[in-house]
Length: 173
Image 1: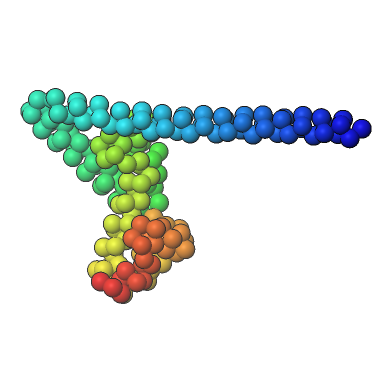
Image 2: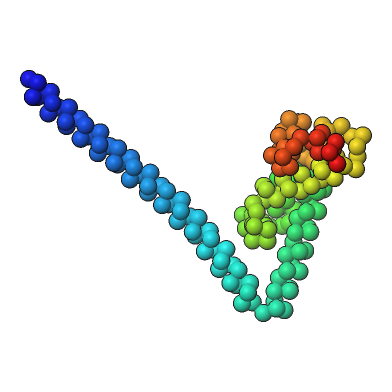
Protein backbone atom coordinates (compact mmCIF):
# COMPACT_ATOMS: atom_id res chain seq x y z
CA UNK A 1 0.00 0.00 0.00
CA UNK A 2 2.79 2.41 0.89
CA UNK A 3 4.59 1.42 -2.28
CA UNK A 4 1.49 2.28 -4.31
CA UNK A 5 1.30 5.66 -2.58
CA UNK A 6 4.90 6.43 -3.54
CA UNK A 7 4.25 5.46 -7.16
CA UNK A 8 1.18 7.73 -7.28
CA UNK A 9 3.22 10.51 -5.68
CA UNK A 10 6.04 10.04 -8.20
CA UNK A 11 3.56 10.09 -11.10
CA UNK A 12 1.92 13.26 -9.75
CA UNK A 13 5.30 14.94 -9.35
CA UNK A 14 6.22 13.93 -12.89
CA UNK A 15 2.95 15.39 -14.22
CA UNK A 16 3.57 18.64 -12.32
CA UNK A 17 7.06 18.77 -13.77
CA UNK A 18 5.64 18.33 -17.28
CA UNK A 19 3.05 21.06 -16.68
CA UNK A 20 5.72 23.42 -15.38
CA UNK A 21 7.95 22.73 -18.38
CA UNK A 22 5.02 23.32 -20.72
CA UNK A 23 4.27 26.64 -19.05
CA UNK A 24 7.91 27.70 -19.29
CA UNK A 25 8.00 26.79 -22.98
CA UNK A 26 4.80 28.79 -23.57
CA UNK A 27 6.28 31.80 -21.73
CA UNK A 28 9.52 31.58 -23.72
CA UNK A 29 7.50 31.46 -26.94
CA UNK A 30 5.67 34.64 -25.91
CA UNK A 31 8.98 36.32 -25.12
CA UNK A 32 10.34 35.30 -28.53
CA UNK A 33 7.24 36.68 -30.25
CA UNK A 34 7.65 40.01 -28.43
CA UNK A 35 11.34 40.12 -29.37
CA UNK A 36 10.47 39.33 -32.99
CA UNK A 37 7.91 42.15 -33.07
CA UNK A 38 10.47 44.58 -31.63
CA UNK A 39 13.02 43.46 -34.23
CA UNK A 40 10.47 43.91 -37.04
CA UNK A 41 9.79 47.47 -35.84
CA UNK A 42 13.53 48.15 -35.71
CA UNK A 43 14.02 46.73 -39.21
CA UNK A 44 11.19 48.91 -40.49
CA UNK A 45 12.80 52.02 -38.97
CA UNK A 46 16.21 51.09 -40.38
CA UNK A 47 14.71 50.51 -43.84
CA UNK A 48 13.10 53.93 -43.61
CA UNK A 49 16.44 55.50 -42.67
CA UNK A 50 18.14 53.73 -45.58
CA UNK A 51 15.42 54.98 -47.92
CA UNK A 52 15.97 58.52 -46.67
CA UNK A 53 19.75 58.28 -47.02
CA UNK A 54 19.56 56.87 -50.55
CA UNK A 55 16.95 59.37 -51.77
CA UNK A 56 18.36 62.25 -53.84
CA UNK A 57 18.66 65.59 -52.02
CA UNK A 58 16.00 67.36 -54.12
CA UNK A 59 13.46 64.66 -53.42
CA UNK A 60 14.31 64.67 -49.70
CA UNK A 61 13.88 68.44 -49.57
CA UNK A 62 10.45 68.09 -51.20
CA UNK A 63 9.48 65.29 -48.78
CA UNK A 64 10.59 67.40 -45.82
CA UNK A 65 8.55 70.34 -47.06
CA UNK A 66 5.50 68.10 -47.54
CA UNK A 67 5.95 66.62 -44.07
CA UNK A 68 6.31 70.07 -42.53
CA UNK A 69 3.13 71.25 -44.29
CA UNK A 70 1.30 68.09 -43.17
CA UNK A 71 2.37 68.58 -39.54
CA UNK A 72 1.50 72.29 -39.61
CA UNK A 73 -2.00 71.45 -40.86
CA UNK A 74 -2.44 68.70 -38.27
CA UNK A 75 -1.22 71.01 -35.48
CA UNK A 76 -3.60 73.75 -36.59
CA UNK A 77 -6.60 71.38 -36.75
CA UNK A 78 -5.82 69.94 -33.32
CA UNK A 79 -5.28 73.40 -31.82
CA UNK A 80 -8.64 74.58 -33.19
CA UNK A 81 -10.34 71.40 -31.98
CA UNK A 82 -9.08 71.69 -28.40
CA UNK A 83 -11.55 74.43 -27.56
CA UNK A 84 -14.63 72.50 -28.68
CA UNK A 85 -13.39 68.97 -27.86
CA UNK A 86 -13.20 67.93 -31.50
CA UNK A 87 -9.62 66.68 -31.67
CA UNK A 88 -9.92 62.89 -31.81
CA UNK A 89 -7.98 60.92 -34.41
CA UNK A 90 -11.19 60.37 -36.37
CA UNK A 91 -12.14 64.07 -36.30
CA UNK A 92 -8.67 65.23 -37.34
CA UNK A 93 -8.40 62.65 -40.12
CA UNK A 94 -11.84 63.65 -41.44
CA UNK A 95 -10.77 67.29 -41.54
CA UNK A 96 -7.60 66.20 -43.36
CA UNK A 97 -9.79 64.33 -45.90
CA UNK A 98 -8.19 60.94 -45.26
CA UNK A 99 -9.09 57.75 -43.47
CA UNK A 100 -8.14 57.38 -39.82
CA UNK A 101 -5.73 54.56 -40.69
CA UNK A 102 -3.99 56.63 -43.37
CA UNK A 103 -3.74 59.54 -40.95
CA UNK A 104 -2.25 57.30 -38.25
CA UNK A 105 0.30 55.88 -40.68
CA UNK A 106 1.34 59.27 -42.08
CA UNK A 107 1.63 60.85 -38.63
CA UNK A 108 3.65 57.91 -37.31
CA UNK A 109 5.98 58.13 -40.33
CA UNK A 110 6.35 61.90 -39.94
CA UNK A 111 6.85 62.07 -36.17
CA UNK A 112 7.69 58.58 -34.93
CA UNK A 113 4.89 58.86 -32.36
CA UNK A 114 1.31 57.68 -32.29
CA UNK A 115 -1.48 60.18 -32.99
CA UNK A 116 -2.63 59.91 -29.37
CA UNK A 117 0.83 60.84 -28.07
CA UNK A 118 1.18 63.62 -30.65
CA UNK A 119 -2.18 65.12 -29.65
CA UNK A 120 -1.25 64.85 -25.96
CA UNK A 121 2.01 66.67 -26.71
CA UNK A 122 0.09 69.53 -28.33
CA UNK A 123 -2.30 69.66 -25.37
CA UNK A 124 0.59 69.78 -22.90
CA UNK A 125 2.45 72.40 -24.94
CA UNK A 126 -0.63 74.62 -24.95
CA UNK A 127 -1.24 74.00 -21.24
CA UNK A 128 2.34 74.95 -20.35
CA UNK A 129 2.01 78.16 -22.36
CA UNK A 130 -1.27 79.09 -20.70
CA UNK A 131 0.06 78.32 -17.22
CA UNK A 132 3.06 80.58 -17.78
CA UNK A 133 1.39 83.45 -19.64
CA UNK A 134 -2.10 83.49 -18.14
CA UNK A 135 -1.16 83.42 -14.46
CA UNK A 136 -4.61 84.54 -13.31
CA UNK A 137 -6.39 81.69 -15.11
CA UNK A 138 -7.43 78.82 -12.81
CA UNK A 139 -5.82 75.43 -13.50
CA UNK A 140 -9.26 73.92 -14.24
CA UNK A 141 -9.82 76.51 -16.98
CA UNK A 142 -6.38 75.78 -18.47
CA UNK A 143 -7.31 72.10 -18.57
CA UNK A 144 -10.67 72.87 -20.18
CA UNK A 145 -9.05 75.04 -22.86
CA UNK A 146 -6.63 72.23 -23.61
CA UNK A 147 -9.41 69.70 -24.20
CA UNK A 148 -9.73 68.05 -20.79
CA UNK A 149 -13.22 67.58 -19.37
CA UNK A 150 -12.18 67.42 -15.74
CA UNK A 151 -9.33 68.86 -13.71
CA UNK A 152 -8.15 65.53 -12.30
CA UNK A 153 -7.50 63.96 -15.71
CA UNK A 154 -5.72 67.15 -16.78
CA UNK A 155 -3.56 67.18 -13.64
CA UNK A 156 -2.77 63.46 -14.02
CA UNK A 157 -1.76 63.85 -17.69
CA UNK A 158 0.24 66.99 -16.95
CA UNK A 159 2.10 65.32 -14.08
CA UNK A 160 2.88 62.27 -16.22
CA UNK A 161 4.12 64.49 -19.09
CA UNK A 162 6.12 67.13 -17.16
CA UNK A 163 6.80 65.34 -13.88
CA UNK A 164 5.07 67.94 -11.71
CA UNK A 165 1.60 69.30 -11.08
CA UNK A 166 0.28 72.22 -13.18
CA UNK A 167 0.32 74.48 -10.10
CA UNK A 168 3.92 73.72 -9.23
CA UNK A 169 4.90 74.16 -12.90
CA UNK A 170 3.39 77.64 -12.79
CA UNK A 171 4.98 78.45 -9.42
CA UNK A 172 8.46 77.22 -10.42
CA UNK A 173 8.57 79.25 -13.62
